[in-house]
Structures are given as structure tokens and as C-alpha cells.
Amino acid sequence: MTTTVRIVQWITGIVGLGALVLGLMFWIANIDLISLHRLLGFIVAIGLLVMSLIAVSTRGMRVLGLVGVVYAIILPVFGLTQQTLLVGDLHWLIQTIHMLLGIGALALAGIMGVRYVRLTRAARAASQVTVPEPGR
Ligand code: HEM
Image (cartoon, rainbow, N blue to C red; front, side, top):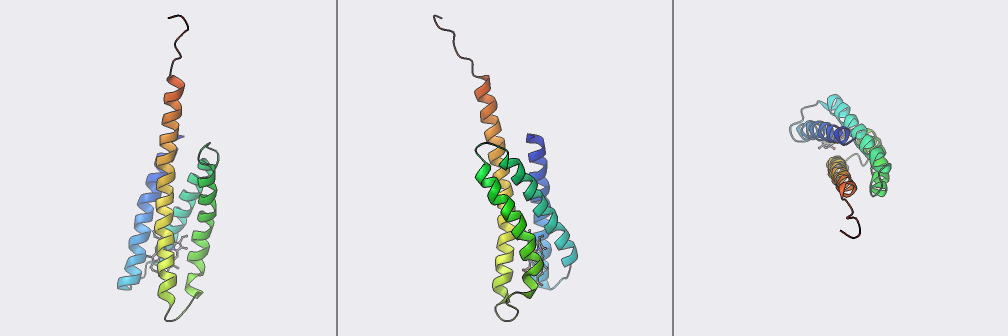
């Protein structure tokens, strides 16, 4: 499972960076690659969801996993509706929240990946500790 977690963590990170760049290109330079951006965003949401489900089934990470599941639902819902929110002078607020939500999703997936690897490593080390026999 550690390998799966590492692969999902990598894919989510790289694809998320791509989504961030495309989003910023749209925002700053008006280069409209939003369809591709949406696709990358969905991959990020799925990556976060997979990671969160693994976390939910791992002792010591269940709460973080639940937060991740909710986050993985909010991210695409907000992304798909944001164009209709606060249209006008204050739309930058929505755009900023959307960008921070996106970066937050990447951070959360990263944190879960690191924590999962650390927990499984600690569990493996603990299972290898040999108890000295009495009288020796
Ligand atoms: C399913 C997930 C996502 C969907 C459906 C989505 C959708 C969108 C849409 C429709 C826009 C254009 C909004 C407008 O016209 O004002 C946009 C812009 C943007 N997105 Fe995403 N996005 C998603 C995920 C992400 C992620 C993961 C990031 C960052 C890592 C991100 C960063 C941005 C940025 C910086 C912009 C430009 C500012 C803005 O308009 O909000 N998005 N996104």
C-alpha cells in the first residue's frame, strides 16, 4: 500500500502543479485553457479522495481521512460553481478562495502521504523489536 500512496501522492502533486499553472495563466494572462484545467482539477480531487479513503482505513489517520473526503467533494463543487458566485467587483474574492482551496488540496494530500509512510514505517519497526527472554 505504501507504493500506492507514494504514486498517488506524486500524481496529485504534479497534476496539481499543472492545474495551478493553468489557473494562474487564465487569471493573470487571460490564456484560456480552463477545460484542461478542470480535467487536471478533477484528477487532483480523485487523488485526494483515494488518499483520504486509505487514511480513513488507517489507524491514527481516520479524522484526517474524513476531512480529506469532505475536501475532495468541496473542491470540484466550488470549482464548477465559482463562475456564478459574486460576479462583479468582488469576484476576485471567489477566485482567491478557489486558488487557496486548490493549493490546500495539494497540501492535504502531501501531508497524508508523509504521515501514512511514517506510520507504516513505525509499525514495521515496532513489529521487528524482539523482546529479550527472561533470565538472559
Ligand atoms: C475539480 C477541481 C477544479 C475545478 C472544477 C476548477 C475550475 C476552475 C474554473 C471554472 C476556473 C475559471 C473561473 C473563472 O472564470 O473565474 C478556475 C480558475 C482557477 N483555478 Fe481551478 N478548478 C479546480 C481545481 C483547481 C486546483 C486544484 C487549483 C490549484 C492547485 C486551481 C487553481 C485555479 C486558479 C489559480 C484559477 C484562476 C483564478 C480563478 O479564476 O479562480 N483550481 N478553476
